[in-house]
Image 1 (tube, one colour):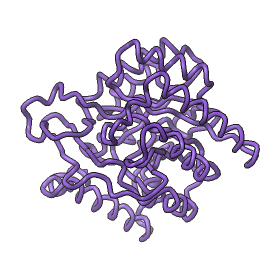
Image 2 (cartoon, helix red, strand yellow):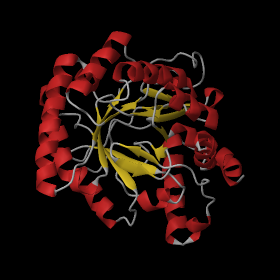
Image 3 (cartoon, one colour):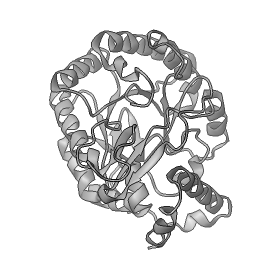
Length: 337
């Protein structure tokens, strides 16, 4: 009820400003001790995925808290796991504003942030300061000015720096807002990247005395042949999980609506079917060998059930929170049991 009252006010102001105001309000509630009064999701069955025990299957997707500055405040909403980032080796401002746009008629969001973040060192410092001891994913990417042929270097820098502080690490090669990034989904480039990541993971596991899983986040805009090719590489390199999917470049379902012409990745309800289709294809190709985390267009409990039935083991929310607020966490948790 509270968010239903606040949402019209938030929707009257610039989307990115509303984003920051919401995070600041959650932080204020946390620091004042009020956040413990937030309604919590019902108890549900834990899931063991990637060798980790998730208290519930509903996670926060990367992108909401890029710098890991609001981890404790977000944890109060009852997520079973939280993913922060995307973070890059060096700080970068991202693309010029405005760069976040709502499409309320379709319950969609378009963003072209461009990995704006304070850099991996700042994120690690924030994670150290957080009291949260639940499952934390850290999503890593490359700097916009790193040549694509040197992208692996950026991912390895981030992996080394976040390894000791993450429950799992997500490798983001699917944002449409960093030039040429999606080229890393091509067979040759992805083979080299995964090989380097797994080699470094093994070395870091020896150094730190713990194994931190690595997940790969892919796009919804892939042909069936590409999905099968990626699945084969995930199996060959024994990756720990795959996150499906990121935002889409398609404008199917929002044609002619205000803001639909804006460049960037489209998320929310319009990407639901594309995301679920990728999950189904991945599930067929992977069998039960590698778990899938489903994300994209979850705005009600039945949408999350759809992802699980398609083959996902866990789900993540982001754009749905813009339209539904924290109650969505409880609804999805209740639906998945």
